[in-house]
Length: 388
Ligand code: EPS
Image 1 (cartoon, rainbow, N blue to C red):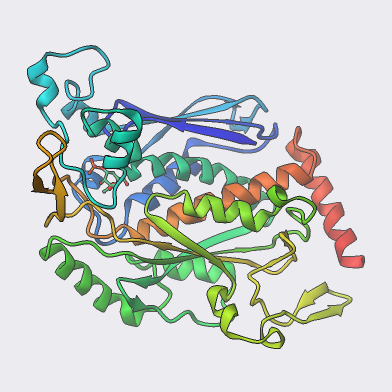
Image 2 (tube, rainbow, N blue to C red; image 1 turned 90 degrees about the vertical axis):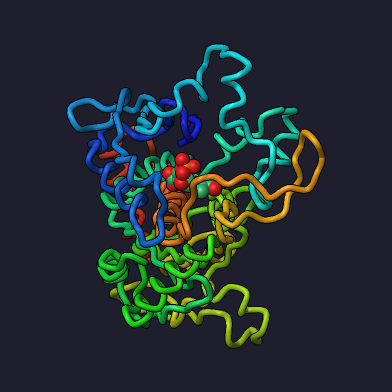
């Protein structure tokens, strides 16, 4: 499966084309819209989410509720476009009109300055429009299809917020993936620990008042994963490595870890490796999951546990020091509409991108033309791994 996304934040629409989905897989716009709505939510989001109500239009690759095996095209309209028709016009506009919303004071931490230098853009809006986290709409739409496929194969995906602006949520032990899904869904900051919600909301309110932003850490857990997705035989076939790329490709994400993650550097091997046990009912399993479900770049049958850290959004209402690219004089950075935090939404995006990588790995391992055939093969393979 491969995919590509396109679209500017204030252009007419966002688009994605996905190729390589098996034929005969159930899919409806509702499956995708549900995930798009989840991405739009979360305490701390800004004005744009009041304008948009992201809804997908599927314009190819699906017929009578099932995939055809041909490329699937997804389109999401930007409702805000009607306020930007001249600023974002495809056709040439007057010099005067070009100055409206021109960006010449790059925001530190955003792609503005480097993108402007790299592509030789005189108006840094040309960078902002594509580097905006609005793009994550399509990552979530693609992830919704991946999740739908995984769900049909009894592979379940959940995500939650582990840290927000330095406030740590306690993660109860031994929760099932369904329970993680259920509990985090009820929380507008997407935590598994209701005792920190009030404190988190208060911090978001205070941050907004200060014209500032906060980041955090999100966690994704995937259960029911077959053993042996990904491979140790070549560097670019390791599934944990692919997931790491996908997570750090989300706007503002700066780091990723699996299982107990960087804590592994502080412990001896005897306290890190997950010991192997066997029973007739379960086959091989592990007594712990410190490695987050991966050995040798392959899934080992334990739940995948991956965390990503999101820096605070760089678009600040109380702008930081910058330079005017016309005069080279020091100036405060341009102020654009923004969110105080998008960490709860980012946990939905993280679910989507990890699900996409896992779905891709499933499609690589099992026959991928017919969904029915694929399901049979996986069932057979699961029986085999249990009796190995
Ligand atoms: C976003 C849409 C954007 C921002 C935000 C995320 O819309 P607008 O720029 O019109 O407000 O709200 O992106 C950023 C703040 C950023 O720095 O990238 C969305 O759809 O999630």
